[in-house]
Length: 212
Image 1 (tube, rainbow, N blue to C red):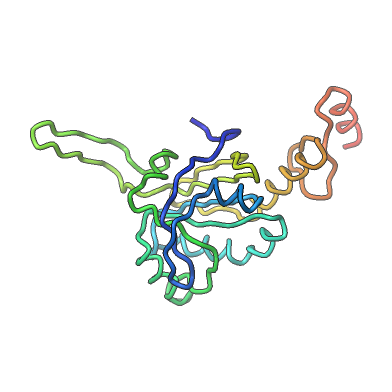
Image 2 (image 1 turned 180 degrees about the horizontal axis):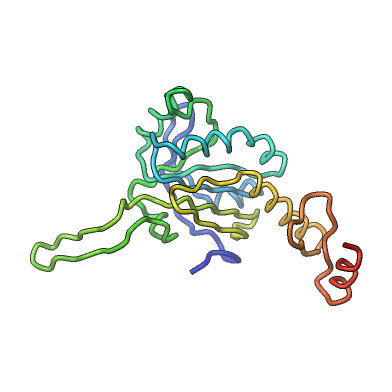
C-alpha cells in the first residue's frame, strides 16, 4: 500500500551521526517538531559500490536541500557501529567520510518491514523446527520518501539495487510541492522552479496549453 497522502509511520529507529553519537530518531516527529520537510533515502548496504556514490551525492546537494527547508536522512539495516566505521573511511577507499546528515540503523528492520521495502522473495516456516527461512538478501531496495512539515508523505519511489538515484529530481519534486503549497496551483509535466503552474480547472488547463 502506498504511503502517499498518508502520515509517515510513527516509529523510533536507532541512528548515527558523523560524530559517532547513537540516538533514537523518529522521521514523523522530526518533520513536525522542526516544521521541515524530510527526504529519507534507503540504500542496501554499507561498504558497497553504488551506495557511497549516492550518499556523497546527497551530501554535495545538502545546501540545496537546506535552502528548501528540507532535512536529509539516510537509512539502511546496518548497525550503528558499521555506519561509524564507514563514516571514518576515506572517500577514495569507498567510504563516506565527510557525510554530515544522520543515518538510520534499522537493524531490527521494524521500519523497513512497515514500509515493505526489503528484498525478500520468499519466506518458509518449518513447523517441525520452528525455523523461518528467508530467500533474498533481507536488505532494502533504494527507496526514497519525501515527507512534508505535517508528516504527510508526498512522494515515494523504489529503485532496484543496481539503479542509483538522480538527486536533482528530488529537488525538483520539493520545489513542485512547495509551489502547490504556496500558490495552490498544480505542476504540469517537466515543471521546474520558475515555470508557470496551472489552475486545476478546465479554463486553467486550456490557458496553460495555449501559452505553451
